[in-house]
Image 1: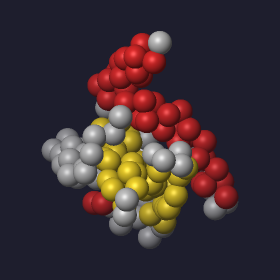
Image 2: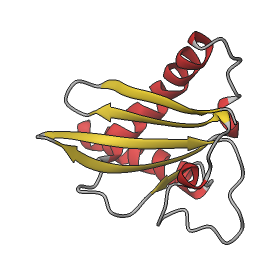
Image 3: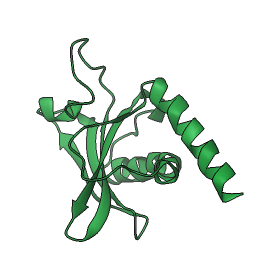
Length: 132
């Protein structure tokens, strides 16, 4: 049963990745397990909407975001670093080599970064780029 769930999660993630919505960025310290990404995909929209409205702004429709991620180890903790962008990338931008939001200096809630702890299943360090 667990293997079937993991296989289904991998297929779901694969379909999302092919749609260009989730892109793994290079230079991670570990490969993020598919079931963790499925969990993040299910919970991240509410986390970002909550953080956006807490700042007094309207949430951007989630389908407009491109999500980039990589597995990083912070101290002894495995964490998923996630960067979101609602701006379309330039045609020649290397989405697997660089985070799109690192090329932007502002953008309000259009650009965000957040960390997800695999051990605690909690988000930390939700940050938005702000406004010029």
